[in-house]
Length: 350
Ligand code: GTP
Ligand code: MG
Image 1 (cartoon, rainbow, N blue to C red):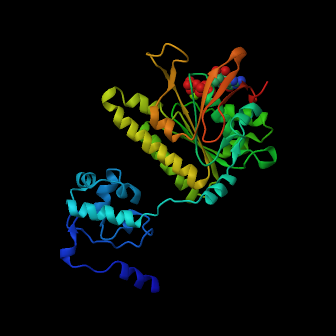
Image 2 (image 1 turned 90 degrees about the vertical axis):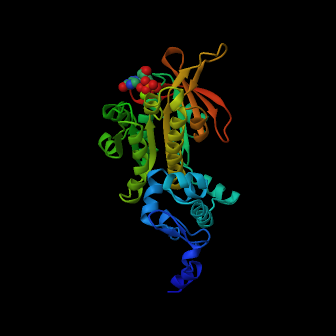
């Protein structure tokens, strides 16, 4: 009752002259959200379903998106007038919970980080103990450099029981190239001394048919965690960039591709952060035609992918069938290199 009264105080009824028309006669009133209390678009005062629908269809899916939009963008999206757009942005900003965390909070968060072993001691050491939860780790490299084998190995190592050094978790495996092989999981599970049936039951595979489908699947992981209560500890996207690369061809579509990739990676990054889970994405390389010295290969996706990946590893084929992993970018680990092998039982040192 008290809370309701307080809300009324914060959202005073306004006369028509203080309101501005949104869409289809809907109105928005001024400064009415209690600071930091708005969670969804529906929490914004005076915004009706028609406006929300329009905002959502063009990608303004949450308060943050509205808070950082320009009035012009909202006008284009909904057809509302400028004053209404400005007021909506102001309301979203005042309602937004700003993400300031103290250094102490962050340190506590870091202490909760879990590390998934790769099966190779050297590779684990390179990564400070394994693939980290709380962020995105990207492996990029040419065909056959073992990006997919690493995905299978991580899936086994996170699902296997704690007694065997695993995490008793579940995996969401977003497969864009139809390269997931349950037979390979069985081999690796046996190699790890785990029950293959148990391991397979904990891996949820979804085949993504195109980039939009891939983006949607990433958004649905939240449902698995919340509605089905699955202990998802690893999300794999193999490959992150293949669909985007195939669908957006030519210079003209580059901006749109990068925008979509950015949005996709934001969803993954948020998942990793909020649920303290590990996200592993794979990425191909292309040859830089203007490079005459050094390694001419460069990862797809440019700055967008590089910037959104917390840890980046470059993979290449080494001598005598080995694979070489090179740590390219990590927020706190020294750059370095190591060697590992892909065997019948999975990833190993020699
Ligand atoms: P692309 O997806 O084509 O870009 O390559 P990738 O980096 O995903 O390579 P992938 O992980 O598929 O394969 C890497 C290497 O692992 C292969 O060259 C093989 O040497 C090895 N490998 C793949 N499958 C198996 C398998 O079933 N058993 C064993 N022992 N080795 C395998
Ligand atoms: Mg692959």
